[in-house]
Amino acid sequence: MKTSIGDLFHLLRGYRRAKREGRTAEYLSAARENARIQQIMMRPMTHNATNGSAEIGWGTAMLCFALSSYASVIFPNSSWRGGIGFLFLLAACLAMPLSLWAIKRYVTWPRTGYVAFQRNAGFWLIILVSGVLAAVISVAMVHLLKPEMNHQIAQTVQSQMSHSAPAAPGTLTPIARIILIALGPINAFLYLMMNAVSIKEHRWKWPLSVLLALGPLAFALWVPGDYIQVSRPATLFVGLVCFISGIVTLVLFLRRHPATPAEAE
Image (tube, rainbow, N blue to C red; front, top):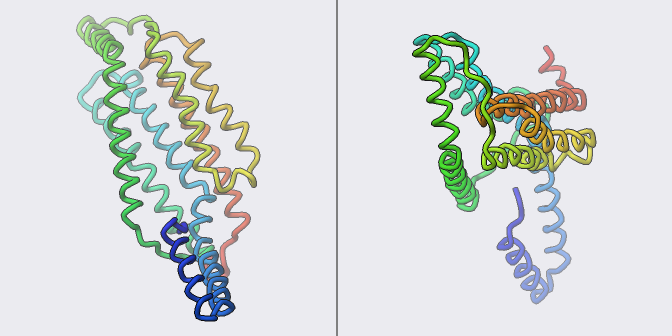
């Protein structure tokens, strides 16, 4: 729960009214008590940001995206290979919300308490804008990577028709290389956002953020292949880093907040 600009103006008007009515001390006492209550109510939300659930969810999603792409290479051509890839894609979409819900429900809340926060119009506006922005970026990437996708599809069809060995690695176009390199800073920024509350406590996450930023760059420069071939290990790398970081964070959280005797039974 954050104090909005409107809330600050409301507090200022209340203070001025109390000053005119000679109730300044009473108003300040009530404001300090309200701040104390707000701080107590913020504790569960703060713990939700320090339990590693977001990192585990995002890492699992990236791993599932990578495994979905690997499914078309590892498994033989059959009617169920596409189903396996679809299941990994579905798991990637569900990984983040399920991770956030499960860890809060079964790990965080029993140890640190639970409080419900009402979602205002501003929250849903941010969700809407984020969804639209994600859709625009996705459409732009599909348009920019259309030549690579068509080339990969043509190679796959030719290999299946001739029953020959997989085609030799392709090459990254300049646009595909830039997009792949940008995968690093974007994920590093998301990683720092997920750990904004706990980064001072877990200073070991700073080197991991640098690793996330430079990892896709190394794959883009030294791994041969087209965008799809290179993005598989790069996405797998990002997923492993985020997932392992989330697991370590969760273990540290459990050590700092042990189960109560009733829960342990």
